[in-house]
Length: 630
Image (tube, rainbow, N blue to C red):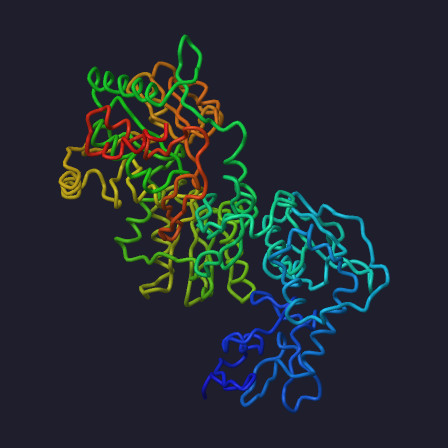
């Protein structure tokens, strides 16, 4: 029996799968049916009646968002009866909806505004006073509600109930005084609250940060990728006057399913504070004082050269950050290995900096398949091993909730001792956090557990590591580990090292370097010079011994930067562009959207310029370009 059926919409024959709603069937045919309450990722509600269509032989008009297509069905979306109904619905919605488009944040991108022009009556017969509410009402840390604008489509309530699974919103009162508010005893503090702004078809829900900031035609929309966790959600930056006004979702179904967490939506302001570093600082007479890039790089190069000549290149070390792009990370580790001859390069200050690379290698060598984010949509069982995805990868949490609502079994384990009971499932996804691979016997139990669930069946059990930071996969792949070269080549792999030396044209250390924690502990003794990027160990309560030359490149004058000999201003992700890698290993591009403040430079630019002063022309080919911005 075929799973397809054919119906006719406005004279066009359309073939669709069984179970397809009329509104989606029309979209396949390129026919737009106006909607307010309908959303393809929410359950059909039929609240607004805007999608009424005429179905042959049906006694009355039908809602296209709740009626499934049937074989041979004949549908009209433009008959006189439909047009009259659409005009009537819009006229009723506008009875109490204020005509405050010139001051409404939704103006210029408002579905109600657009549909009124296209399907509305053109004029209003209503002359009575509209209902009034106190405005705006704060619903939480990020959201404001203008209740008189609400058309009660219930999209926000349904999103919180069905997708976020945080039932924090509800309709209050009855009749013409019904309005949306927080549910009784609830606080609207969900980490997904910002999605309600985007799915609201009117200007009822607005963001506190963006309110009254601009109109769509006043800013440039720049596609990019969120840098705040390892999911790599796709976003769009609305930019005006070298400032990000807001961040909105840019749907990538295989990554984010069209949603954003509040961290990715609202935390962009943390990159652009008024106290951003704008110029280099040099320690003179015991205090940090403003300097030029020429001075800062000259001092850094002279000290690095002297340390290398006195005690060897291995007295120098570099610690990067998960906020680095892949391009910055690659050049950073290459600089230390080739120009300075040091293997001491890392990007983490946790206990097991090589856990990621080790897990990848172990999984690959033993035939374990890597789990991709869309695999959760088909999973029969999901294991969470030592990870808190709600905090570490929030959009992944929505995927898991979606799978559970579909019927998938969810098993949460904080450790593998004793191992959880295996489910009777054909498709299993294991999401392992760093806690699962850093404790006990390390990686082996996770790998063996995955193999036991796979039971020799290809594709039955797939494994993914969920790192707590953004570009951990990319940094590991770029060689920002003391144990691995780019491409996850172990430093003790003679053949791999030889191939890398031939590619780079330089000899490199063929042994493991110090980890991030070991580098900090060795400062002043084994390590005499450190280049630290985007990390604040002092501010995080870690000890930082005296006696070493310290270069810090960061965006703000952190507690660690205050201890430095040289401080270099660092660009934010959207000020340079580049690529980052998400937890699947998917490489995505962040486009440049802003000019950096002052003379701030990327790590890539700083390393290019520094290499020129240390006699590494192969790394300094863009030094003049880097310095042109100073």
